[in-house]
Structure formats: structure tokens, C-alpha cells
Image 1 (cartoon, rainbow, N blue to C red):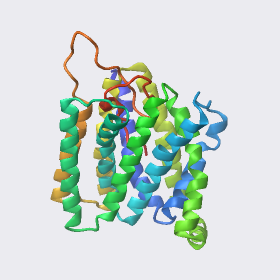
Image 2 (tube, rainbow, N blue to C red; image 1 turned 120 degrees about the vertical axis):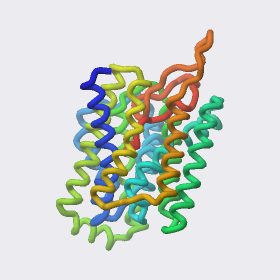
Image 3 (tube, rainbow, N blue to C red; image 1 turned 135 degrees about the vertical axis):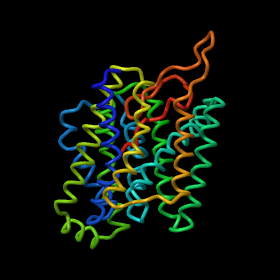
Image 4 (cartoon, rainbow, N blue to C red; image 1 turned 90 degrees about the horizontal axis):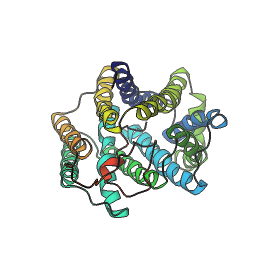
Length: 319
């Protein structure tokens, strides 16, 4: 990879990592589900009028949007709203890689390799250590909600892989159409009309800047650059840069909010990342017959043929 392209990959990781801080800033004034609805209105409008719809049935678009966009981000926003630190959220959300391996093994009958199983075991141990660390100082509910966000993303990964090769940016925009109305309805039921009115009245420049960052920089610019790199380089050369996302996320949270993980949270995070790296970056030894086919990260592709679950790693926090 050329140095310029490597720098662009690092830039995308920086954008996606800092996105968790942007989300946290917006949630200071706007309820999480309402804020999610506003974000995806901005993501989809006017982009939906200029970006071609992927050649997928509406059923597939709706399902992918329900899990990747609505389920993942609704749970992530609620988790951060409940008190989950944004930096730690950027780390825990990477557990989606491990959940994808497990779900693909059960759903698609893809047999994980020993290294993938080792990665899942390491990642699970890391999550346990993080949970113990959080439990000593804070309620566990926000952590559980963010873990469920990772599960939702993982289900979306497997759904994406089943539909075939499609435009990542087109999939992001068109599947995002699923989000605004259900998110607004959930906001009305859970947060209440008064909270919605207060949130809209308090929607100032910080919330607007947060919305612009998450919608334009993270969703559109980030995936635009990422998918361009994937079209020019092998997937294995690009996806490792996504390991920088929680590094930048935790650094940005430390600078913006003075967030400092506890020793157990830091240790658990390192074990979790080790598990993700083991499941994604390490390959099976070559044999006389090819056992795998390369697969691009979500939302760029989804293989039509069965592939090892590690290939389903999206390579990003999808934020």
C-alpha cells in the first residue's frame, strides 16, 4: 500500500474513533433515540436521491438496516446515554467480530478454525475482565447494552454476507432509511413527547456539529474512503487499520472528557483486542486446495458462498 493510502486508512480510523466522542457530545442535549432518528435523516437525505440503490430486494435492505443501523446504533446511543464511557464503548463494540464468528458458525454452518476459536475465547475473557472492572465501580447495565449493540451488528454482518457483493456506500444510505421512523416512534414511546420537545428546543450548535460529524464524516466520508481503499488493495492490507479505531476512540475520550479506564478495564480491553486480532488477522496455513475466499468488510460486501466467519469482520465500528 502506498504511504498516501496508508495515511488515508489511518485517517478513517481516526474519524471513526473520534465519532464516539461526537455521539457523547450530542447526547448532552438530545435524547438518544431522537438523536439517532435525526442522524439518519441527515445520512439519507439528500444522499438517497444521488446514490443508486443496491440491487437487493427490499426485504434484505430492511433486515440489514434493522440490525446494522437501527439495532446497533439505538443500543449504542442508549448505552452511552446510560453512562457507558465513549472510549470504552469504541473498544467493547469491537466484540462484534467475535460474535460474528459464533453467529456465522451456527447460522451459516461455517466451521471456525482453531485460531478463530482461540480468538473468540480470548475476546470472551476480555469482556469478562471488563465487566468485572466496571462492576467494581459502575453499574453494569450500560456495558450490557453496548455488548447487545455488538451482537446486533454481528447479526447484520451475517445478513450482509448472504446478499452478495454490493456498494458499501449505497448499502449504508439505503439501509439507513429503516432508522428514522422506528427510532422516532421508539423515542415517542420510551422517552416521551415532552423529552422530544425539550430535545428539539435544546438542539443547539453542539448537537448540530455532532450530527454533521456522525452523518457526514463518519458515515459518508469515512465509508467513501474506506471502500475506495478496498477497491484498490487486498482486504488483508486494509482491514488491520480498523484495529486503530478503539485506540483513537479512547485517546479522543481521554482528551475530551478526561476518561481514564481502570486497570481491569484496560487489561480486559487488551485481551479483547488480542482476541479480535487472533480471529481476524491470523490466517490458516495454505493447502493444496483453497479453503477460503477473501471477503470485504461490512458494509462493502457479503459473500454468496460460505466462507470462514473471520472474513465477516467489518473492519470498523460502523459508527
